[in-house]
Length: 411
Image (tube, rainbow, N blue to C red; front, side, top):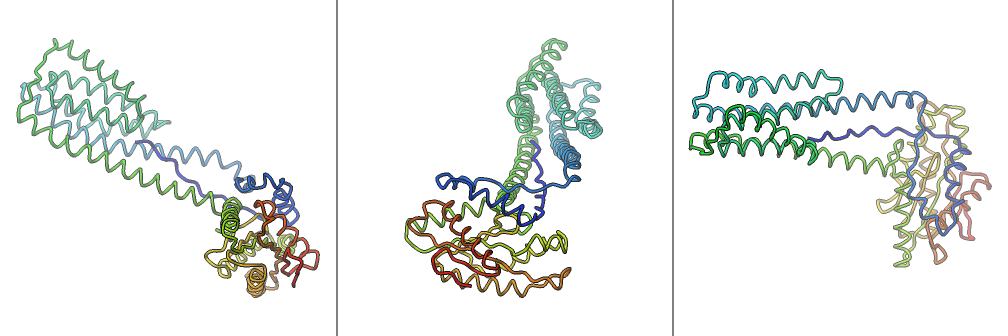
C-alpha cells in the first residue's frame, strides 16, 4: 500500500513587538488597493522558526520518512505472509495431483512459509526499506510465474495466483509497477515452462477448487481491510491539515486567512440582506513592553488569555480570529456599532480582571477600532481600513478604549 505522509505538528508562532507585527503584518493589508484587498485573505500566516528548528527540520523529515517506510514494509509483510500461506494450499493441491517430486515440495515450503519473513528481514535491515521492499515484490512476481509453469497452467490456481499478484502491485505502485512486475511474471513462467518441456494441463478438479477457496475469499478481504484502514487515516490527516490551515497555532483561534474568509462571507450576507454587521480590530496595549519586561512566554500567556476571553464573550455566530502578532479580528453579525460597543465593553472588563502566573502585577488592556458595514463597504479591504483607522484613533486617544469609525466616538 502507499505509505501515507505523517502530519507534523504545527509550529507555534512567537509574538513579535507591536511595531514589528502591526506594521510588518497587518499594515501590509492597508497598503493593498481596495480593488484587490480581498486577495489578502488567501495568504497563510508564516510562523517564525528558531535556529534549532531550522537545523533539526531535515533530520526530523528523514526520520519521519524512514518510519513511514518501515510501516509500509510491515503492512506488506502481513499481506505477503497471508497471501503466500494461502497460495501454498493452491500450489500444493496441484503438486499432489501431479505427484511431483520432493524437490518441488521443499521449494514450495521454502517459498510459502520462509520467504515472507526473509523478505521482511531484508527490507528492515536495508538503508532504504521501501526500495528493498519493491525489489521483494518483483521477486514475488517472478516466483509466481515459476509456480504457474510448475502447475502446468492449471486454470483456476494459475489465474488466481496471477490475479492476486497483480492486485498487490497495483495497490502498492499503480500501473507502472504492475507493468514491470508483469514482465517478470511472464518471464519466470516462460523460462520455467520451457525448462520443463512446456507441460500443459488446464483441467481443475474439485480438490484443487476447494484448496483455492481460502485464497480466493480471504486474501481480497485482507487487502480491502488494509485499504479501508489507510483510507481512514488519510481522511483523518486531511481533516487535520484542514484544521491546521484554518487555525492559529498558539491561540487555537481561526487564523488570518480563515478570519478574512469569514469576514468576506459576512460582508456578502450584509450586501444581500442589508442586515447589520460590524468588523473590529482589537490590539493588545503595550504588548512590546510586556514581552521586553516579562519575556515571550508571558507574552504568549497574554495572547492565549485574550483569545479565551474573546471565545467567552463572543457569540457562536461571531467571527473571532488572530489577525497577526498582538491583534485580533472580530466580526459581529446582526449587530450595529452600538451593539459592538457593548460587546467591546464586556470584553475589556473581563480582560481587565485577568491575572497571569508569572506576572501578577500585569494588567491587560486593549484598544478596539470598529466599523459597521454600509453601502460604501465594497470589499473586505475597505472594511478593514475603516476599522484600522478607528483603532489608530483609539490608540492616539490614550489606548484602553473602543472607537467606532462612525462620527460618534465613545470611551
